Image (cartoon, one colour):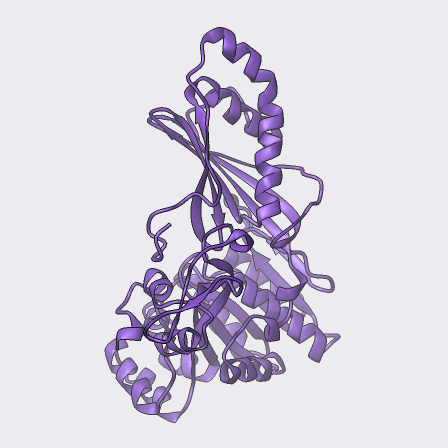
Length: 408
């Protein structure tokens, strides 16, 4: 992999299977079960978050997503492609005779300890493509190190603010960022902090799906289809005497409006939203129909975050510019990175921001206002991580997709 992470490099030597005859295939098919078991076990051992089985002209390419980056690990021949997908379907409880529709299932797997913690769940998704069926296995881990805000690597100012919010009796906290930026993990850590600092509170979560079981919390899974939606469930739950509500995501105007009302009527509400930055999240909430006075009265803060790969401490090297560079060694599977760290920014309501929201200012105006307040933005926080030798400028550019902060 190049240091930007844009083109995958094998974290170990690939295995390429030769083209096989029908007779050879018959001998290999019984070994497909052990092959799948090996790939899943190896993915767990390496701490992969996803295992991809991508159909190509020559067969199946197997990839592990390690620390957010895909790595090719196997090339399986087309002769066993169908058997591999069928075996995955059997493990996931899917219809093996339907190859023309998307399917989702759950794989029962013995708990295993890997680089990312203990495996708690495996979810399988199969989708038809022009070259055959594509399958992705998503792995969920119970990593006790991520159950507390203090272990996430948040900037000190944001960490203290989130701790203060955890003790609040009402209001709305939003986490924003793209998929895979760690929002759900931060929310789970917030719930853990609430349980530790203010025990005895009634906490209910609405999730799609439930990714991590939390003792002492009533967790509700919202199915992708059916009559139970986030908005209907949230409206009903307000009559269940909750004190803290966690929504997996605010997806539509109806849910956003109910959430704002709940935050105004004695509930602490935590949720996520897909948004590029804090300013855009504020504008989007207004566009969803939340009245400005409701937003200024209910919103406690917005956190925007990204996950950056952490430099491997065993092999990182200081470059001529004084910053550390990724090298690669056996400890980090030759990637130069091991684990991930958060880069984040946070916006809190104050008098000047309230005036801007009440005036329905656009994202650009709000951004200028925040810069005038001296708020540390995402790239400034990422620059701090580069200077501390925790990540690289190339990694920040890959994840944030903006001008390299090291060059500014």
